[in-house]
Length: 288
Image (cartoon, rainbow, N blue to C red; front, side, top):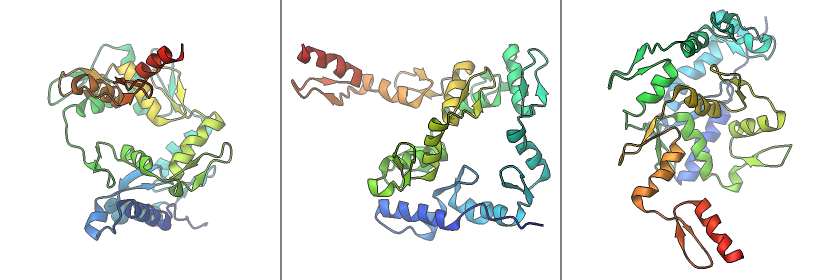
C-alpha cells in the first residue's frame, strides 16, 4: 500500500511566518505566533497557527489515508473521498423536485429548494429577521457583530474573515516579496494562493457554480458576492446613517459623504473630489 504523503509543506508555513516578521520588522514571540493566521495551500484553507500546529498538521500527517485516484489528494474518511470524487466525475445525485436542477451535495439542493418557496425557516437570534438559507443568515449575522478577530500585523486593520486577512496582506507586499510568477503574462504575486487564483483567468475554468442560477465563476469570492443578489442580503451597514450595502467597498466609498474626504486632486487646478470618476469627468474641462 502506498504511504500517504504529507499534504502540507512545513517550510512553506515557516516562510509565511518569516515574511510577516520581515514586514513587521521584528521576530514574533511564541505567544504572538499562536494568534497569527496561516494558509494551508493544499487544503486552500486559512487557519490559526495554533490550530495548524496542534490539529491541522496532524490530520495531514497521520489521519489522511484515503487517496483520490484522480488528483492524489488524501482524506481522513472514506465518505469524504466519496463526496470529493464528484468533483472529477461530475456526478450530481441530488435533484430539485420542482425544477429538476441537479446538485453535487444534498445541502446545496436543500438551500436551492427555498428559491421556489416563500418560506424563510432560519431566524436571526438578535433581531428576529428570517432567511431562506444558512449563507444568507451568516452574512446577516456579521451586521450584529462589530468584533473583528483577525488583525493585520503590518497596518493594524482588522477583518471578520481570516481568508480576507490573508489576501489583504498581499497589499503590503514589496516587489521582492513577489516570487510567484505567472508563465502566461509574467505578472508576479507574493503568495502561491494568489497566483493560482490568477491562473484561472487564463484557463477559463469556472468551477464555482451558483445554486440559484446557472452562472459559474472562477473565484469563490466573486460567487459569494453574486449570491447576495439572489438573497437580497446587504451585510454592510453605515454606522452613521444605517444605509446598507452588499459590498464593503461600496460602504467604504459611501462614508465619504459623511466624512467629507476628497482624496482625488486635479493636478492642473488643485480641485478635490470624493471619487475617481468625478476627477476623470473634471479633467475633460482641461483637455478641451
